[in-house]
Image 1 (cartoon, rainbow, N blue to C red):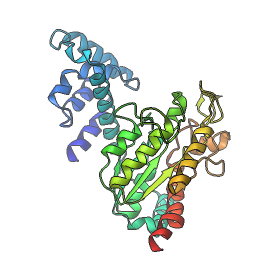
Image 2: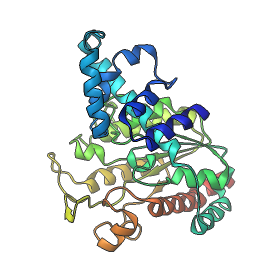
Image 3: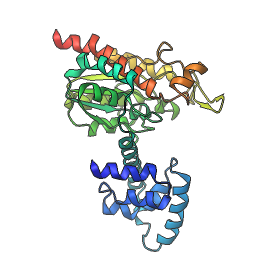
Image 4: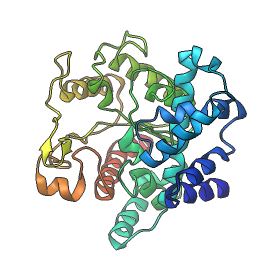
Length: 328
């Protein structure tokens, strides 16, 4: 942990691309075999800092003779390492966020600490960029951790599909997640955006959204004592002042995000799983400019205020559903 914290300081605070690169290369989490193809992998990251990318292009030109391209003949191997490196970067950035709370935060933490969720010593989280806490100082898992003292294992990855399309997928996250007292499973909008079929529970994890949902639950039930499901929120992603799309926009299959969430609701009812309903304007209304400015600046990812809302809703559903079942 100390080493990763030091690396995160170099990654975030150091503006010199070469030093940032060296900090990542020194990470004990990168095996020697991965280092051999690290140059090309990091170049594939669309989120890579422009200065870092430019520096790596220079380095890449100097190392082409040293490292041959045998690794890139297997595209599945390349995809695996690409996703692994993205996860390493995500983890380092997450560690850098730190935990510093104001009075409003402490009020929320006090409220959470008095709820039944405090009884859980370990909490696992799987999902996409929202659960990861992209574009937020703190995510809902960090608020819950501070309130309960629970050990949080957050495997959420930005851009993760529910459908099993590789290492980053939420299905694969469920396979890797260690045993927890409580698992928070956030469904995603990325399958909708990628035109993944909604499908049915008879489908395999890689075939459809709902097929992956049922298989993910099957994986979770093997190791997780309690499971909660989170829906996506309403969304109005913006570019400047222009709304790029909304949750009612149709994908190439003719479905909007509500169609995918409706299927999740039906699956939760079928499996008698508690559902934290975030897709309501009462909680998240990014179509409203004032709300968007205060809670979801990009119209898609909640900031710390938004994650407080999510944490509160998780505690409410836990109290009214899981806590009640435990006491029956």
